Length: 283
Image (cartoon, rainbow, N blue to C red; front, side):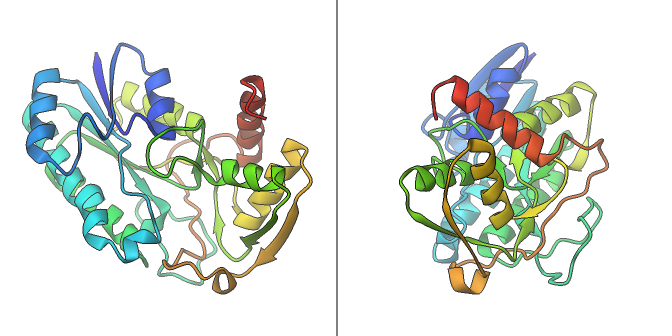
């Protein structure tokens, strides 16, 4: 079986590429740009994959507020182009989305299920939701996976970092760290999300799924756990979203419930990530 992984330089694309069995063709942005539909179609027509994994995205959440065309070009229209090619080649498309497609329910305290009505509150969230709808409408063989608070082994694509790496870098530099305590999510380890995704593909899954580690926390609680488990002292201060002043609004609560069996708790997954990081000499 031949697998093509878009966004293979990022943390999720890398985790998938390392774990998939059979032939794996990793494609970076330079090799196949989602915003170039003719190039995209030519590449996939030549490769003739059985499964396409779309880990590529415009994921600069704040910048998307002033660059909506760029966000929609990759996250929506790029997903549409990819879905059209996968339909025509009769292959399965696995497309990754975000918890940021939620957020309108400011009083929410129960995890969002797959059947719950989305309500994005940022350009990025709207672009990701549009991409979801286009994939589900166009590609008969699809799996759409929403995840949350993703982190993993460093990739060279996208933003080139993640929350865990950023917190460790700031703590090691002795810098004061201010993290919001009024946004609740579920930190999710890319390796765990990749393994669950592969299991879905292997067992013939179809449709929409939420895939995250279990449990929830605020971003401030996540930061505190990172420092505790890494054995680092940090000058950590809790602040509000208003104090942080990001350009894009974030969901106050974006914990995802799932129709799948739960993955391991987020603290356990974080501990595994930090241990793997130590073993390769990153700490």
